[in-house]
Length: 76
Image 1 (spheres, helix red, strand yellow):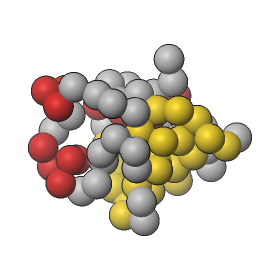
Image 2 (cartoon, helix red, strand yellow):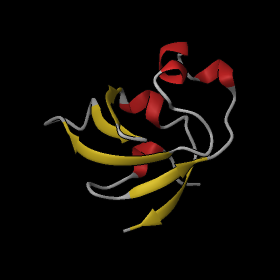
Image 3 (cartoon, one colour):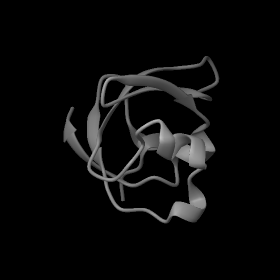
């Protein structure tokens, strides 16, 4: 199972279905929704937080949260 936390820099994926209970409402409002494309831009020095591009919007999320969101990797 691939998650956002397993992305490497430059990789892209499509967000799959997930339980709304595990994702903060703020992320949903910012476009972190099933079917949207996500790409890892960079990570902080200790790999947390992760800086992402979700459908053109840039946001940073904790690795713990990223590990809860399943994706389908579409590019290496």
